Structures are given as C-alpha cells and as structure tokens.
Length: 374
Image (tube, rainbow, N blue to C red; front, side, top):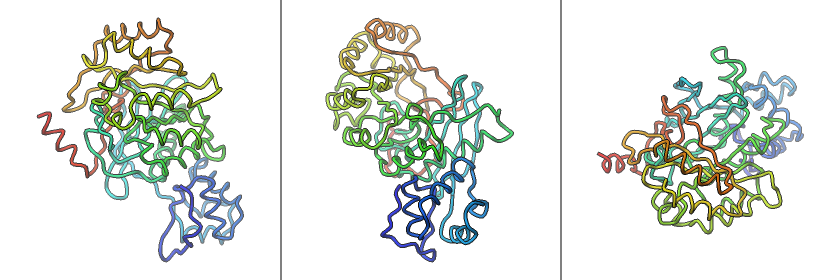
C-alpha cells in the first residue's frame, strides 16, 4: 500500500498502521510529516529486521519524532490464538484479526529451507471445487498489514525458545487462504517488502505468488514485480477446468497459457510452476497427462503433482499412488520437469487445500456446500 499524501495526517481523526506501507509508502508518509526519506529506511529496518513495534525503542529516531509516531501511528499485528505442530514439523497458526475473523498461516520446515505459506484473503471468492477454503466461502480482502503481519509473527515465533533456532523463513508462498490477485493493491506492497534488502531481503526466486489464472492481473504483475509465479492448473482441457476451477470460464486455458508462455521473456532460468491436484477418476488418466504435455509445450515449466488432501464433506478423493506414479512417468518421459509434492501437515489440516480458518461467510457458500454434501 502506498501512502496518499493528499490525505493530511491528523492524529485526532485516524492513526496509520505503518505495516500497511512498503518503502515507497513510508517515504511518502514521512515526507508528509516534513521528515527526510531516510527515516523510512530506518523504520523499515526496525519493523522487519529488528522486530520492534514500539516506537519509543527506535533509538536512532529523534525523541520528538518517536513521540509524534506514537500519537499518530501504530504497528498492529494479528493475534495468534492457536498454534498446532504436526508430527512432520509443520506448524500452523490460527490468527485473529481486528474484526474477529481468523485466518491460517503455515510454516513448513525442510532440510534446505523454511517455507511460510501465507493468506491474502479471509476465505476465497473463486470456489475451486477441491479446496477447503473455497468451500468455506468469502468474507473480505486482507490489508497489507494483515498479510505482512503473518510473516512478522512467524519470524518472531520461530525465534522463541519453544522452537528450534535453526528454523527460519527462507521462502514465502502466497498459497494460503484466498486468491492474491483479487487483492492486488494490498498484495503488491507485501511483495515489495519481502524482497526489500532493508526488510526481509528474500530473493525473487524465494517469493512465489500462486494464482488460479486471473489473466489481466497476471499481466500487470509481470510489470510490477520480479516474484516467482505459480499457476493452479488442475486440468488440461477447458471442459474439465471449468468444473474444477470456475474462473476458467472467464479466462480459458488458451488465454492463460499465452500469458504464461511469455511471462519470463528471454530468461532461461525462470520457470512457471504449475500446480496439479490429483483427483481420482477426474483428471488422472493417461489422456490427461498427454493433454498436459501438449498445452505446456513451449512454456518454461516446473509441474507439481499434488496428492489431494481430504477435508470434511469433500466430494473428491485422492488418486492412488500407482496412478500418480504412472501419470508422472508419462510426463517425465516427454521431458516435463515434474515432481510429486510431498504432503506436509495433513494431521493438523495444514496441507495444500485444507486451510479454512474461522470467519463469517458473506457468500453463504459454506451453507450451500454442507447441504449439497450431506
């Protein structure tokens, strides 16, 4: 989020959560206060590198500025209401927002990385048929502060005594609750902060935004950010994808894949990650694999096959292991860079497609879903 200088600062009217701003937004904020731009750099480091949310502790700011910030600004994070630890080391946090809604954030430790899966919306509006979040309905977009706050909290929690000190956030993926490109204006500053050397300093290869395929926003993102891209594909023909991923009716495969084909021009290292959930009897037949080979031709591709993770009232089941291996073998022999994603955190409902949170469903979709599957 960028600060709008046209809205004059008035502490009697409003307080500004500085977590809502990337570096450019903070620079505009301090300029409105008559402060030099480097104040934004200092505060960015205090917040995201030092983990300080008390302005009085920002000792390289003048006393007068610290007092002014304390009166007209704040640094408010979501509240952790529950932490669950999986037998495989995955950690899931239930975070309470200021309006009482709750979202979920997941940390997945591996030998060579620590991946944080963050949410961008309270629920999801897209209603993909195999996703627990979609079945729960939609409430609202998250603010920039509520999104980057998930990262700040995770870093803080992982540094506490209750966790091993070798647990760090090295990768961030927008694969939690919500479609991030439907919350573009609030997500973009988060991407900026994650890759800012004065904040988290993550490489563009370690920050991944996942989308179901909103073509105009994808085109805009390619211009605005160097982050990596993942596309929730899940079907290789329009007829099936219309069912599984309903946004395909608006942006069919031909349009979506045309954007993917040119997304990283003249850069052989960068690939689009395609996500493909394996659903028994739906999209796991050999002809589906051959269709994938055809439609992904010419696109720098990394394909993840995801065993379907069950959730209450789900209408699908996971393909059996032998079917998944045969499916992978067809793709591999055709030269596709393909792997089967390891299921993590399923014992605490933290696996891909299982995040649901606790929120008011304004779409009434959760009620309809329960009725249809009862």
